[in-house]
Length: 82
Image (cartoon, rainbow, N blue to C red; front, side, top):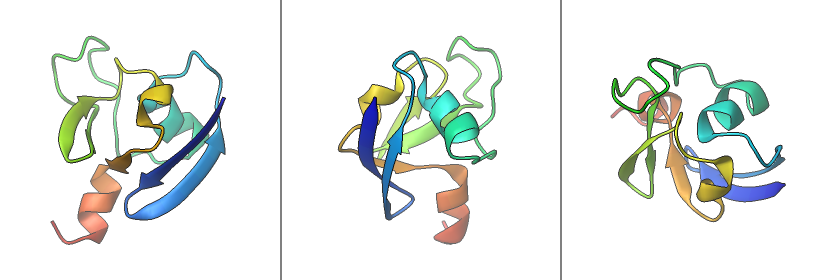
């Protein structure tokens, strides 16, 4: 599946398997290791990223959900001085 979205302020285009979560996309597809796997149930918050400014549990949501959105990870927060 082809995805186009904004990642940490930069355009991103990538291909990922349909079954991948946002966490899989970030860690396995884009080698961004700041977002962690914790409980796998969306309870602990370890996998939280921002999608259009709102918290998103990356372990629960399919990667297709970020198509056309602005995604910010911990790496983006660090780079932006936030």
